[in-house]
Every structure is written in C-alpha cells, then in structure tokens.
Amino acid sequence: MLSLNLRNLFPDKKHSVGLDIGSSSLKLVEILDSPEGYVLKSYSQLPLERGVIEEGDIMNGDVLSGKIRQLFNTAGCTPQKVVVSLSGHKVIARRAVFSTMEEEELRQLINDEAANYLPFDDVKDVSFDFQILGDSEGNPGHMDVMIVAARKNVVQSYVDVLEKAGLAPVIMDVDSFALETMYEVNYDVQEGDIVVLVNIGASMTNINVLKEGCSIFTRDISLGGDYITESIRDRFGVTLEEAEKLKIESSRTDSPAGGPRVDPLEHAEPLFAEIERSIDYFRSTHGGEYIKEIILSGGSAKTAGIVDALAQRLNVEARIVRPFQSIVCDEKTFRLSYLEEIGPVAAVGVGLGLRIIDDR
Image (cartoon, rainbow, N blue to C red; front, top):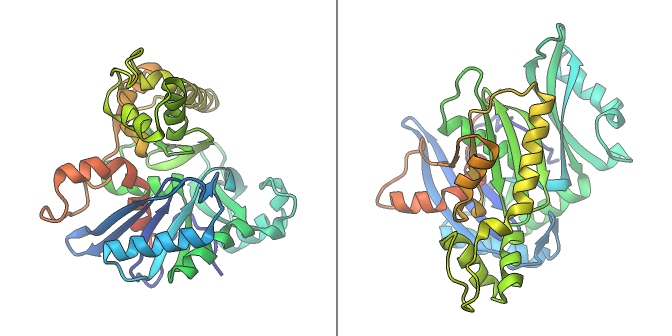
C-alpha cells in the first residue's frame, strides 16, 4: 500500500522518475545516481488544460492519464516507478514535539492519538507518515517530529490515474519537502542559516522555511500565478495567453489595447501580502531569527520584477532557484540557457527525481 513519506527513499535503490503533477502542467525529471554524481537523463514538460485538476482534486482522471502517457512518450521514457507529490490543502504538515522514542513506538502513538495531531474527523480515512528531525532544542529528552497526512481517497485518486497510465507510484511526497530535497543537493548549507523557499505555482504558493537545511515552518497559500494572469486579463480585456505574456515579459509595457501601462506587480499585490504575512508570522513565532535569503521557484517566479519586489518588501535578499547547478547535465542535450529557462518550473520535479537513494 502506498504511504505518505517525507524523506525516506527506496531501500533497494532502484531507479525511479520524478513526476510533478501541477494544475497547469506536467513535468517529468529523470535523474541517475552515478559515480560522478547526479546526472540529468531526461526532462520534459507538457501543458495541462484548465479544469483537469482544481485545488488539488483530479476532476478528469481519463484526460490526466492520457496526458501522463503522452509526457512519457515525448520524453522517450519507459513507464516505470514514479515519485509524485501533493500540495495545498489536500495535505497537512505539522511539526510536533514528542518524548524521545523509537520510530515504531512513535508510529503507534501517533496512530492511537492521531486526533491530537491531525485535523481529521476520522483518522481511519487518513494516510500519514512522519520524520524524526532530531533532538528538540531547549527540551531535554524530547525530539522534533514532522507529521504529514492526507485523506486516503485523495491519495488513491492519484494512484488510480498513475496506474491507468501504466506507472507504479512508489512514494507520495509533498511539494514543499521535494523543494527541500532539491535545495540540499544544490546549495551549501551553513550552520545557523535560515532560508525561505517560495514556490509560486499556477494555483498555489508553497512556503517552506529551512534552518540548516531542515524544515521548521511551512504554509500553503491558495493564490498563485493564475491569479495575477486573470487579474491582468480582466483589467485590460485580453486573452489569458496575452495576459500571461504580459506578466512575464516586462514589468512596464504597453497594454495591447493602447491603454495604461501594465504592471504585473500591481496585480500580484494580494499574493505579496500573503507571503509577507507568512514571513511575519514565522518571525514572530521563532524569535525574529535572521533570514539569509528567499529562493523563488514555480512558473510565476519569472514574473517581471517579482524578485526585486519581494526582496525590497521583506528586506531579505531574494533570487531565482537554480535546481540543476549541482547536477551533471550533457551540454549537447541540455543547453545552459534552456536549464536557466526551465529551472523555476522544474524545481519540484528535480526534488522528486532525486529521491533515488536511501538517506535514513
């Protein structure tokens, strides 16, 4: 039976493929673990029509299965074991403190007292897993634990679609923690460093605060790039495609209708406000610790001016993610300019594709 996992990989070290199923596109990332390090074998992405997935719910499984098969065919990748992820309100991530104990004892305790840790009416309808993060600072004899859970029917809906596409799902990860895996491989982690990973997807924004590479705070915001695009569309009466182009190409460009200039950052204000509130809440609950930097990923991380705007607003250095900088890439197959272009949208998939060795 498929279970939710945070960071445990495949005990048999068998090869798998990362498959990022977003609301607006599918991304396939195949990474090999070689003596020379991690090697990018294949990458492919495919647009997904609106309405196939809404707020994490699969609305048309037949279409989704067909698109996944098409993606694998395009990539020339034989159907096999895949690692996928959930995001948003379909998955719950909670950090908790427990007395120090063995994993099996902890699993039984969480199962027996799940109502104390998971906001579900009937825990029998829930799949959960956990990761012991280490000793709890300031609590001798205790340990910090991250618990992740999702309703079984949600997990099963993804399993059904994947199996119909001829794939074998082996791990159901979480977008925020897939980004954490990507970060650990590609960035140097220094003692005391606090870094904020902000993933702006089409319909959801994930925030994961890392301390020394380990998650200490997560939040999902029900706003993403689609909100900015739709706001531009409604303001200037253009198509969604034209609005998307305006959002990415320039922070100050003429409206197609010859009207006022389009500033995508103006339309991103509600999203900025939610991100700022999340960071303020983190600071207030964690003693106002110094944040080293914000790393942006997701398709809308390429919105014109968004990096500088967030850096100024939050008074923290910000930059675009580089998920391939520590991965060997054949320059003939993957040009540097191409990797820079796809980097923001590929970040979650890279994290999923890296789940190929046992790190326990």
